[in-house]
Image 1: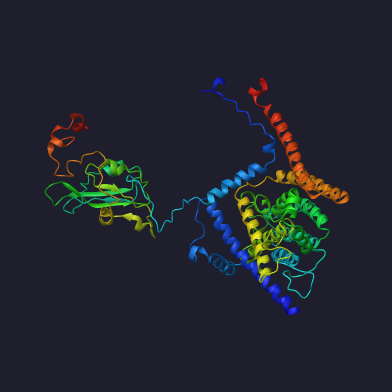
Image 2: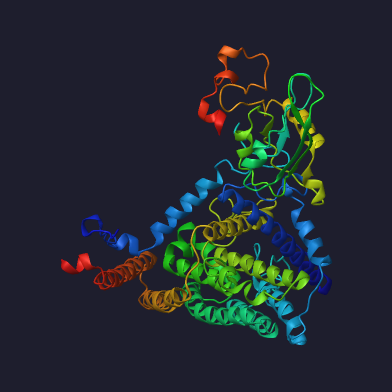
Amino acid sequence: MAISEKDIVWVEEPSIGLWEAMYLPAIAGGLATTIRHVFQKPVTEEYPEVKPVLPLNYRGVHRLNRDEQGRVKCVACMLCATACPAHCIDIIGAPTPWEDRDKYPVKFEIDELRCIYCGMCEEACPVDAIELTSIFDLTGLSRQEMIFDKDKLLSVYDKTVQGGKDPARTTRGVLGPASENLVPAERMAWPIDELPSSQVNS
Amino acid sequence: MITVWAVKIGVVLGMILTSCAYLIYIERKLAAYMQDRIGPNRVGPFGLLQPLADGIKFLLKEDVVPRHCDRFLFYMAPSLAIMTTMLAFAVVPFGPTSTDPDEWQFVIAPGVDVGMVFIFAVGSLAVYSIILGGWASNNKYSMLGALRSSAQVISYEIPLGTSILGVVLLAGSLNLEDIIQFQASNGFLHWNLWTQPLAALIFATSALAESNRLPFDLPECEQELIGGYHTEYSAMKFAMFFLGEYTHVITISFLMSVLFLGGWHFPWIAEVGSHYNGVGAVKCGVLAAKVFAIIIFIMLIRWTIPRFRFDQLMSLAWQGLVPLSFFNLAFVMFAKQFNWPVWVLTVASLALLVGASALNGMRLQRRLRVGSVSSPALGKI
């Protein structure tokens, strides 16, 4: 759309008087600004000694959550791998040895170098098993080292869950059905028997 | 006698080099504070050992000499840079001096009657180091930087020289010690800063340009020229350029305080007639404090005014400072000839400044009017 004539505001340059043409007052004003900054508190964060305060929803390195018995929470539904735009999640599922769920991942690998840290896996997960932590300074000496397997992702959970900075979060207010047995059926958002027919069919 | 001189020269050289190193530290720290940063704080407490670490780094770094350069000139340039600025310091008094040769003289070469001329002669040689460095590097950026530098230094030498001629006329001597003596014996209100404010302003501006400091650091402006004339220099040779430049800053600060701020003179503390134990040290301290204040001022200016464009630089020198300094000189000559009181000079200086500003304002206004014709809305008016 072309800009119409009435939307244009012509601004005239301010006229230059004797005061401005002398330059010196402007220089003095600039010096005053400079000197004022000398006495201001520096904004520098001394990083390795002082860690930055990150918001709670910061998206850093992933972790695999454990359930209350210490088992991996993931049910190998592949939703995160499907949602991942960078295709950095590689899951191989298998029938569980446990009673309360059907599948669990025997292999769960995330390529941290390939990941774009968008957080879609966290959003897709129905059991809140995968979460992004506030660890941002991830380094490694080889590419192989940066491909995190299941044990490493679980160890990230062990490392971060006690820190207080990364509490287990649920994005939807309620946990998925397979996640918590403690949630009574009537308080579930979508009780399994009453799923809308469109979702069951699709 | 010769040993005394040698020791004096050694001590002064050592002082200059150390203060250069620590001035660089102060500049980095101050620049950081001005930009709300912290600055060097890793080496030693508050980063105080940073200059030492820098020195070690400069000495141990690989000294790269490009294959296509003129080796002789390439080596000569940094040595010239440091030699000229150090030589200029020979006649600069850094404390009280006297005509009695038996007394301790706070200057390396006492009683040089052509002191000012010597400083300017030697100081002008510094541009050789820049041109040689730029030429010998066989690098287009270096060459451009060197060319800019030569044009700039030659242009600004004229207002620099002319601005101090008024001071020289007033004191009736080219000897720096006499100029201090003249200001000190006449008292605080006869500091040349008060009688020659315009000259002081012109001198400060031109001196900044002479020493290639911001806002006149076009010879080495990084955005356009990578490093300027010292692009190809590394390790100690680069450090020598750097030291030369910093010594130049110290020298012009000394000159500024000697010529315009009364040297070691300060009312009540350090007068001509004051006699008490350690008066020499106090006078040295006063001069050092003035020099330090000027250096801090130069550092503040550095982070306040953006760099000039090259044509602005040239027009400032030729259209602004050169005519102003000539007018100022003419006023001093009239005042001397007809024995006008000194305050006339102050008034004349300020009047010149205001007049020049008015002319400048009219010029800028005209340019504004010419420029605004191109905008359609204003064209309708």
